[in-house]
Length: 144
Image (tube, rainbow, N blue to C red):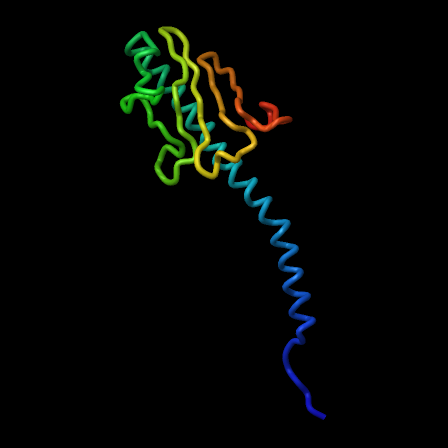
């Protein structure tokens, strides 16, 4: 009688099927986690831009002049992308509307982050948070 060591084809196919099922469950969860972490970074960047706008206002007594071409913040005010420390850009930061006494900041998703369910994150001079271009059924509480 000959003893063979190793795995049968059936055992290998079962192992591959189990790995496939686990990967099918884990990958969407991983993607959701990546979207949430990039969104959290954008929210922090929006808060940082809001703080920079307040500092700018104390120096210039005006929000409007902090806005450069196409709403891009002046480089002396704040960076225009998130993450703020470099890396792959996930959000573009814009001063969407600014006057002498008010502003509205937007974090616009770009690249793979453009598929995020929350769309554009907004922050007003009053601290009011919002979203625009979000998927249907998504609330502000889901994103902020």
